[in-house]
Length: 421
Ligand code: EPU
Image (tube, rainbow, N blue to C red):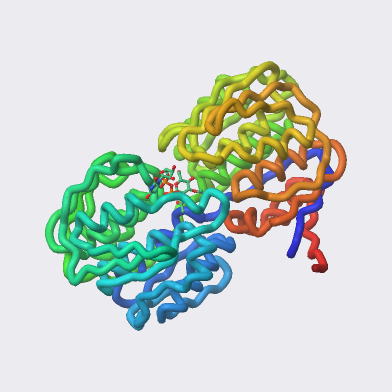
């Protein structure tokens, strides 16, 4: 068990490089189940969720070899179709293994996936989309069994836009018989990136990155080499940190064009920044920021994953801001923790909150409820007066590689302390 201990108020500045995206690499790893031969994935973030995904693949018989930020995988020797319950319960994204396992092995058994408070959301869209492709799905009390001798191409309109359910169906369809049409597909940048990799491996996917994806099934796919796309959530998080800490920070090795909704918000708030092809520099300003309204939306709208850090920034804006979280129930339930630090936020209903600024924050003893709320508390601790301790940092390390070291390089006073139990 470890915790972060943060002394707030240190002047931040300098450069920080963005890692490969956790939410891209998890799907790239899952997609190797479809591939014959070796695959090499580079720019892999050393994050706990990535370790769990690799452990799941190893446990069913795949050869997985990781060193630094590279993972080599060969799934030809997979023999098991039951995914280990303890790992699935720790990783919501294990749902993206359903399609590849069904397509290549005709069966998959898994427990109800978990991860964090948000991870226990429904998987009905996975079930429905696999059923239209001919899979039989048995729902037991605590688990699911999916069977399909051979998946068949089908047309499916997602009643709700879902990133992982889109990716899962797209992967399943690459080895199905005939044509699949995914309608109302999610458009997040990780989806066309995954499609591009699978096409390189022999798949026939078009339209990824739009709301309609067409996949013509092929008999076999081969392995390849792929570099993980830069993490747009990290890019946005570091930019928000710079604005909240009134620091000049250059964020490098990123894709600023994947985070346009945040730059639009910075424009509205008068936060100065400059953008290059693979960097963004947030400049230091003493001007007050005005309060704004922000509504989370599917890509290219304002990312739900940036909502908690952005709310911390809004505590430093003048006046009353409104935060409207439309993607998740429960993604505003960290606000009570911010309030204990001196913020003034009011939860109007599970999806809407008002944030009254400007408020001085002070250090507190806290626990990280989930990944993105956890990093928001880190940002709050960095701009607060005094000492903040954050427990349950597994939830933060699920998605951010060596975050304490990287923040220290910007001048942050943050220590990772092992706690004796
Ligand atoms: N939903 C259902 N049924 C389903 C699937 C989803 O009702 O079968 C609902 C969810 O409960 C949610 C909404 O659909 O209310 C949208 O969720 P979505 O399925 O798009 O989320 P996801 O695919 O499970 C991915 C990211 C999330 C990110 C969301 C939205 C991965 C591994 N996870 O989740 O990332 O917030 O898309 O962009 O790609 C994170 O990294 O912290 C994280 C939670």
